[in-house]
Length: 247
Image (cartoon, rainbow, N blue to C red; front, side, top):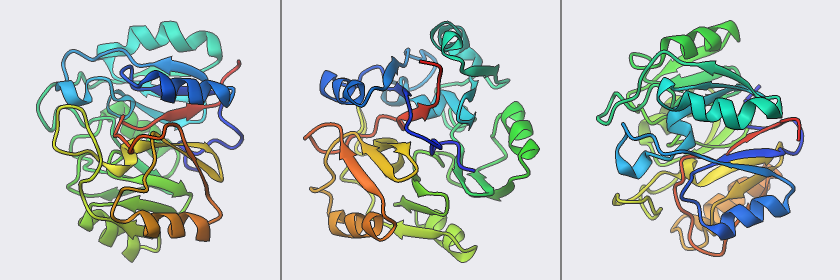
């Protein structure tokens, strides 16, 4: 099970608080309740609103959340039937103090630099009998667009090689060409969210990316549909975390 992929159509989405109204309204048109993130003041400005930096979905209705911002999400999500767990790691501004919850997931595995993973998150991942794939890339979820249980897209060469050699279907794309607030470029994993098990939501249109044809073909061969939430180029908003709540 990959918690980023809802078993049915998601009805709750946690989105970067700076997401524009076009993206937010597109989500609402899909009958998704949008929860905008609050700024985590301890983080660098570029990722201070990113969902995948401050939380990790244990399953489709359970989140582990950094203590920095826990109270806000308890208020916003507890009445939607979303279970919340407070993590142990208080996030900080400098790497690696900002990566504790940014764990990538595919079927049966968790991917991260586990030297820096939040201890409570590691406990819950172990409870699911996941194999830990240790890599140096601490921004593991940011770097991995989850296509389906066994497939993903990344610009990280080492992640591509490591996951490919253990049997996962991974498309390697060029780094860059993705907007990220206050930075030179962002990551492909932060431009998307999974609407259901065969539909991916993109923050914008990836047709201006140099690997757009390869991305399109990769998705099509896996029977994955794309929904562009805006007509602008894709932007890294730190993953659209989709959930199944009581709405």
